Amino acid sequence: MPGSSEPTSSVPSEEAVVFPCAGSRLLGVLHHAPGSPKTGILIVTGGPQYRIGSHRQFLLLARSFAAAGVPTFRFDHRGSGDSEGPYLGFEGIDADIGAAVDAFFARSPGLKHVVLWGICDAASAILFYAGCDRRVAGLLLVNPWVREAEGEARTLVKHYYGQRILDPAFWRKLLSGGVAVLPALRGFIAGVAGWLRAAAPARAGNAAGSNNARDTRPLPNRMAGGLAAFDGPVGLILSGRDITAREFLEASKEAQWRRLLADPRVTRHDLPDADHTFSRRTWRDSVARWTLSWLQSIGR
Image 1 (cartoon, rainbow, N blue to C red):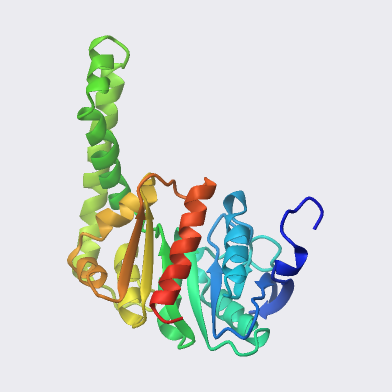
Image 2 (cartoon, rainbow, N blue to C red; image 1 turned 180 degrees about the vertical axis):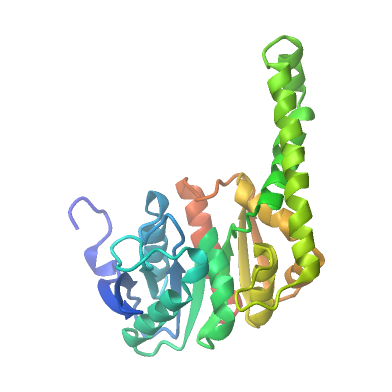
């Protein structure tokens, strides 16, 4: 490859794949790995991402995994990237994930298992899907998306307004006139009021439950149900400088989540300085190394 210091022969081959899903054609890219590996990684994308990822992170991660001997498949679900069909949101891509797993196996002789890897709402989508496919041998969940009105307001109050109140620099600016007092107070009061307004209907829904065909429980509860239905190993990566990760940590304080995350099959890795999408190379490389180490630890 011109301009590359790496010999072309050492770079695993990459194959564009077009495959069907519910009457639409989806596009994916398969990163082959040398030998005949039995486990591969399927990178699931969420909105508004597509198969390349923010600052090319899915592409670069897939190449890292393949170079380490793990075939990797990344794809555009319906309505995203170069794939056809309507955009259904992360709660409606079960069929897309299943079709991608089918395509991955069809083009990877010897493949026996697949690990689903996803960030943000793709991690949430993975939890909805994983329990229904026995080919899925593990889950890698990165900064899972649990956002609903109550959780968002609670997180903002605790981690934004709460930290500002305890920050000496904030009070110095306030007393010196560097911060407008009334807008700051209005913001804090509005945050608390939003939390209280959102909490009431959400808690009522939790108590009432639902027998409808469409599960109307709060998103964190449905995700916990998905995790409970999956009996394989789970890796969890959380960024320290990410509101989505903090919302997940707040939601995971509920009793069901505490039990699930305390299970020995769940392994957690924190990157205290990283942002949501691991925009620095050192953070992305850490995610790649930990993913590969986790795969080895679970015997895949």
